[in-house]
View 1 (cartoon, rainbow, N blue to C red):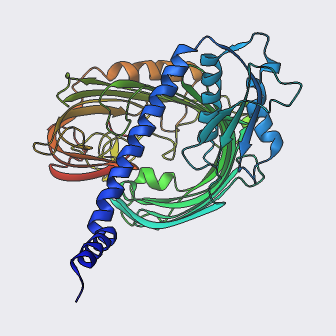
View 2: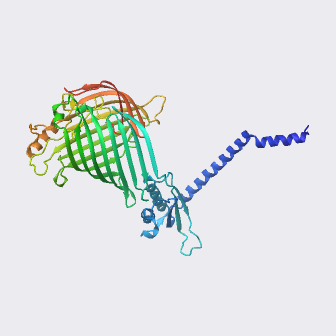
View 3: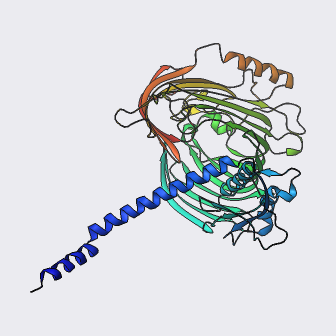
Length: 507
């Protein structure tokens, strides 16, 4: 039997190895360390605040762990911030700002893991060339894996598909990306693409892309299947005030095939292939805080395309332009938001080389309007000109909508789930005054376009109202709505009741 003194020793030993006691002591230690780290951060902030005007010299910037990235690529990025390349000296505040911008650029290339750590140190004091104001900057940037392969399924408005996507990153050490995509679905029966993307001059806001693609899409609303094969290239850049521009060229062979037995005469007349050669320009001014479910801000966007004019050649010639705007207005801190959108577009026929008269637009190029991501309360392509049951598209359109979004009770305004009440509508028109041959004199085309645009406001637009539930997932927005058509024209196809929509752009 152990003596009383031995019992005390055993009790102390049991306390030392007691898991609960160990966890308690560890928690206390973590709290003390956290408090110390917090105080250290506060002291660092105070030190920076007290010395914001202190003159410093950035003597070197080193990017650590970027083993697969070319040295010259990184040098173009960091050279401008070195003090030797500046006419005026840095203050500490200015130096930290410049280093932060370099770090932000590294993050935007998408080839480094986040976050990228920044360390600032004094140079070696034994170095005779160093001065008391010199600082060395170290960026700890661990590279992401060289490839990613994803597979999955997607479901959207009238479509479901399975896909595989492979991405190769930093191919040649300059943040180049090669992306291969393949999918099979119910409406887009097959789609394949291979895209190469590269920044220009180590600038994440200045990029070049070349892309090859092929697809086959069932367009049941117009009784045919469209097969595309072609390629495109584009240059995109972001201005200092946040405006994004894209300028590109597209060459694509389009085939209207697999016509349904009951295809309309309009669709039958357009069966066959055509080649489109066009240049495009896209401008985007995005100021919304969260594009999929904005609570404040605005969007302005234009897309312009010139096809078949002069040296572009091809089988079709036109100028096509679309404009879009959206504004989101919050109601204080309630989580209630009003969003309003406007869209419009036109196709202006041009004459092909060797022909004096502009040609009628083709079904491949005309606008379609209606559906759960467009004008709700109507079937997919349910608005505008029809030939029998076929939606044949239009040359001029205008559409708009407004939605009032509410937080879901007991869920909270911080979640991406909302209730919505909406009203939306639009008109889609074909060019007035076309003759049976599909051609007009240039002067007649200008007159017809003017009359068509003017007629947009002659009558009430086709419109619908309703309510539903909205969920903004990081990759897409999902809506389930109940819609009630209010105004509808002959031959247009409405959709009263429940509908489901998924996409990244909604009216």
